Image (cartoon, rainbow, N blue to C red; front, top):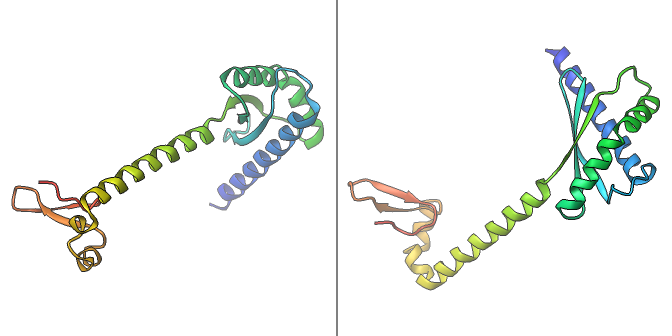
Length: 165
């Protein structure tokens, strides 16, 4: 068991070092005009340490993302050579660059959740707060859930508080 923790710790340290060193190279040393403003968000190291996936967040549209990834893939030999010298290791993993779209996805999810919250609030305002919870004591006793019959003699719980018939 301790061997696995040590191995995981070592892989995390190597991945963090790769992230820092490649990020420094992107910021200042790579002079390819295809590489726009970008930063490394995550490095995923293969368990054997032979390859690494590098996720890059690019500031710009899809065209700039594609050009930046092409530029980084073209410079990957130089990057591996520099990493070999800087890290002082025998083997540097094969590098594969991918666009990280997690920030854009997070922004989209936040936008959709905001819309749903506004809709829920407008529905609650339309029907009035008293229709949702008959009293504040009902809301407290059910933990924010109201109960309604589902037509089969059983009580169905709804998190929105609106009874469905």
